[in-house]
Image 1 (tube, rainbow, N blue to C red):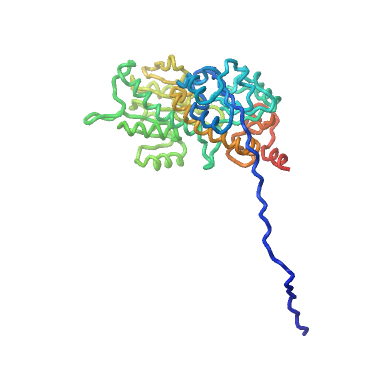
Image 2: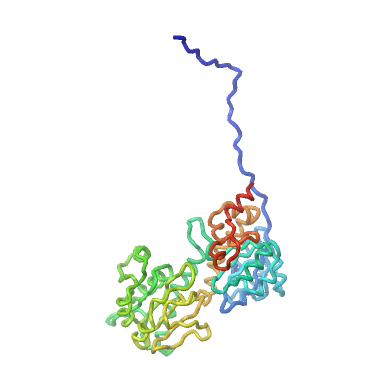
Length: 406
């Protein structure tokens, strides 16, 4: 058998490591950001606070704020000008900006002011969105990012969660206000004191709104009962609060029994698409105690009480079957300064990243959470639900980005 020869090594061979190939960081881009004054019904929030504007300006970005844009949240033009923003009298001047930041959806009149290849960051609010608005935005090759679907690095929806926390905490404050004599309530203190039975609160929905409503009610000393058809949400709520509570699925007989004894009923059901289901019938409401209070947070999507009708901040309540109904949509707008700060805390770092990454295109490529919020990309509709609802052409965002990457 022939012996295998050993490999020949030569001293002329030199082994040295290759240089690592790194991505070239894009050049910083200075942004021109416009903040128009909101004219939508009951919208008092502003998307960027003066403090956030100061940070953006100090990083080299330019901000144009329409006159009186922040007054609904008690942020004034002098606050913005001192932070380095330019104050504009004309809304059309604001809409010449590269990026438009809004706390309300783009209205039909505002679509006429949009510029080609602009970036819009705002809520969508599906019930009021019209097909013609989307088509106009597509025609102008708009890139649009929605508050509702924007995700953070943890995969949560930071703006939606913040607004839900505000609504949940506010619900019990509102209910307590209308139980008192000053608003012609039955003179009951929400919560309880020594020797007096606690008020009974029924919460329908175990999401974020329901959780924070339950936290506030328990802190005030109320007896709380939670209903939801999701066992997972009920377990999560109980674990998050750390207190054993009455929980139940939405079984009509049990729900009706608890509502008959309730002082406060809160509708906190959410709906991914379409209208919130009605789970409390008119018959159940008619059997409730006189002077009890219903706060239907779900009214934004139709409401979960059959007797609910939309009210306003000017006339927030009405009575039916001697039960007081509070059905004001967009509850966080009633606490607009806190809500504005919460929105601004999410958007300001996002805008800094857009500038640092050389534009929103690079950020969309890099961050899945931002991609999740995009529903229009350079005029292409990238949200399948909107495509089905309005019968418009859908284009997969990942496919658009893959083509861009090539």
